[in-house]
Length: 128
Image (cartoon, rainbow, N blue to C red; front, side, top):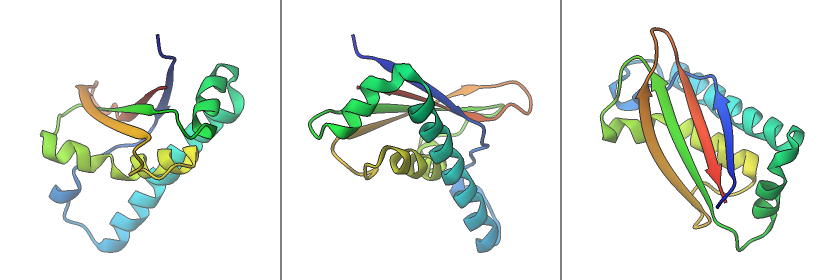
């Protein structure tokens, strides 16, 4: 059975195509989401001992990693907007792993679930 690694990123993902905002606001939000994702995954990789197998999978060029991103929010998004809402987090996770997010070694899966009022997060589950 493959090992499962979980991290929670405390960010509020939104549909990029539906937002009407200044480009600078979008850029700062995107940078903040990317940095939060990178820091959460890096800290888990560096601190938690059970993550040894994932560290070895990252270093071994032949290993494949599946990453499931789950959006937690009071309202759901349609499938087209769901994938786009994860872009900054996906980039941050790939930065932390040291692997390009378009690599054949990574498979990305996107899901969502309803949260309580004002509950926002991205749950990351990685298997190798």
